Length: 94
Image (cartoon, rainbow, N blue to C red; front, top):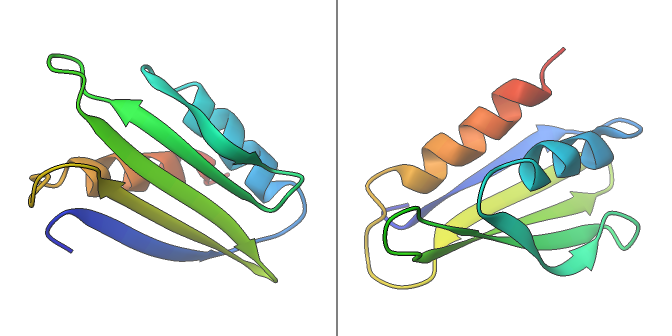
């Protein structure tokens, strides 16, 4: 995706909660809506220099987690969302 990334990963007990911790520990990232308990959370991460918002939604779907990171404005994110999401998922690995 030129303006974002979509990943589907296997879930297990507490994996969403652990990923939520990793995401909320990221600088300039906060919850926009939802909760782990509800099974879906959308986060905003703002760029350091200009404060542009990127949205990431994580949704529990049975035995999988769906992670969708995307830009809010513009057409291309130059891989920023892919790198961010892949970094979060790498930090999630045991």
